[in-house]
Image (tube, rainbow, N blue to C red):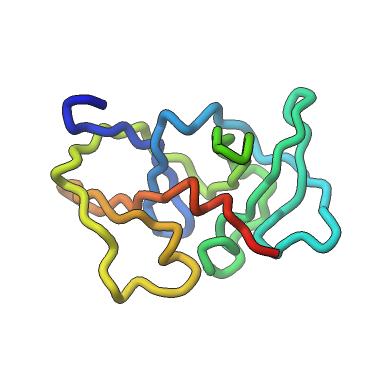
Length: 144
């Protein structure tokens, strides 16, 4: 947005609060069963059929180096528009669409390491918590 604000679609994985640029979210759906892809990277959950479109489903927990979560049945997925096409990422629980100010953004500290380091752009400071902003371009760049 031109006024220094950004809209984030927010969600939870465990107790962590994440946000993705709302302009990159095409829709929110109930998580679907994925068809496994032989020899795919561990972060690839498989492929799903979304009204005739084949969409890559990414296991966001694996991608971020987090432990396995609850059974995906009943979870929701964000369908993201990326340069690599549509991608689905499962989340534990949806949040809201929040408007954050760019002045409240800070890059991740150097202590953030591991797989999550390249995926997290930084954090927005809210009055009561932090929103970890994910970089969708990095999120979909998965090496086998």
